[in-house]
Amino acid sequence: MANLEVIEITQQQRDIVLSFPEGHFHDLKSLDIAPGKLTRTISAFANAAGGELYIGIDESLGPGGGKIRTWRGFPDPEAANGHVQAFESTLPFGPYFIASFLSCASERGLVLQV
Image 1: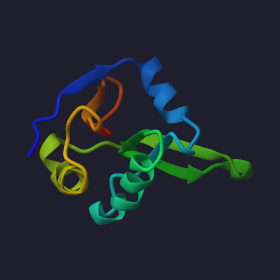
Image 2: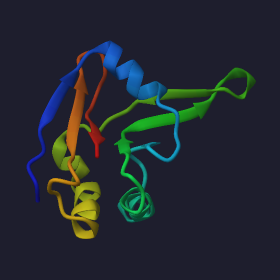
Image 3: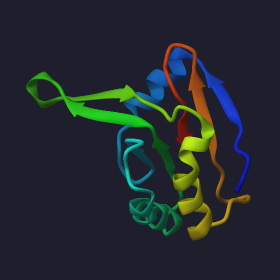
Image 4: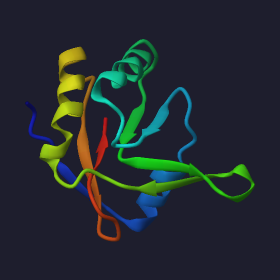
């Protein structure tokens, strides 16, 4: 399995991640997503011009139906093994497929960025 880099980001960068509109180029998933369900997202990005996936972002409905996103990352890199293995078995890491963990001092856990 790949040894993924941990990148420290600022609160401002965290806010940008939390505000990404989901669509053809960005997708945010809870860390509770089953690794096997990620294959659809992997295939969609592979068949398009690519995109970024962030695993470890929860989403709930706020007052008035607005989306509220919160950072809830993996406690450590080992906790993401199943998710990383799902990616590697579908599309091996390389020049067209990269992943890293994002860490933010004001938040708990690591968000997997693919």
